[in-house]
Length: 308
Length: 253
View 1 (tube, rainbow over the protein chains, first blue to last red):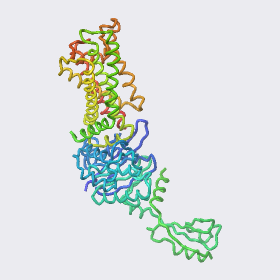
View 2 (view 1 turned 30 degrees about the horizontal axis):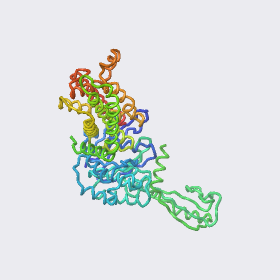
View 3 (view 1 turned 30 degrees about the vertical axis):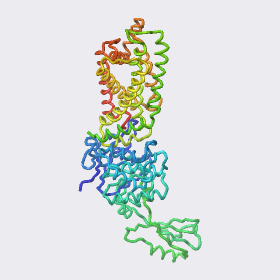
View 4 (view 1 turned 180 degrees about the vertical axis):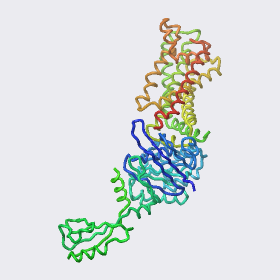
């Protein structure tokens, strides 16, 4: 099946000379949730803005639903919903009016039943007659999502959707995203919160310095780059790694009370058995043993740090 | 044509007028009434008639034009500047809306507001002076063309403006002097020859003159020339707007 979004050799250089995107290519499949991770200024928002039509590309091609985003902007934009990073709202409008306005902008006839459903799904219905300035930041964020869903888009872009949102609301939003995925909506979200990507994404892309560093299925990524750490707590502290253990990649922690051993879960041999044997032979007595799987955050920091 | 989008923008803008009814409508009516009291009653008692028309009636087309220009430029510029200022412009730019449709929505609403207030001013004037419109269709043509042209002008100012100071620069500092010096309160025949010649460089003179002709069949310049000047100005603005949309000037990076 053809990707619903296809980005080819995309370059964006702003008038200031700053190159925000450097030859970016990327395919997004219909129905998936893609999380784009990257530090500030990585190019995430520029990429989304070009796909949505807010920023003009310098070169390259972007196709949405098989259509070119510049030439066939009506076709592409009518199937896209965008939730921007900033809380940009018409402060003096009511929730109902501003969401209805968004639907009209996308060429759809008024459909109060749909607007009602969207507002109810986002727990906004009881606020429908409130002016936006009367709402909290979290509620305004929901309104932005409601606006983006008002025209029943097939693709939803969420640019830092949970920035500045409390934990409960964040989890509510993840549920909303999950429900949307069940209806077949393709979701692309950018985020600073690694746990967000880890929680809800099917695929994860890492962008930095205007380049896509990698894009992988989240499971494959965790499997490929995921390392495990064995932590051995000692009964007596040590000041240096004994000579007999020098062949192992060990690190002393907690003032000599713990040893850390990194190993590859995919490796043929993890080396754990021989390490424990070697520790016993060296006369080191153990208090406790635990393991920790590296998180997406570790992977992200490693990737971005290595290529910075 | 995305008519739903045009309607959405248009009615969204018109809704703002309803919210600010007091300042949108009452304020220009009070200002115009004051003009009639000061100029019509006080000055008019000294200047009985100009070209056979009572002074109070003579200044009516100029007063309507003053309000129409100010309102159309103000509404046209604010309509597009406000979403730029608040950031909600993202929604317009990411919608399946062509630039022509955006202009129809915003400029249509600004022109409608201008025409509404202009009509109210005309009604207010009728309370003070005995008005007679010799050529109602020509009057309507000048009225509508001026509203559209200056709403478009305001729209361009709104795109160009980077802050509120720039937004107010032309409506506050350029338009009022042009209207006052464009024969709103006098016939340019009353000026010395040098200032008569200078006045011909003032585009607003042509608007007021043509508009006044449609009321009283008296004009400082030929009404056909007045009409041509408006059309040329409108064409120039449309050309400028085409360039803005093609380049994305101050709208799309």
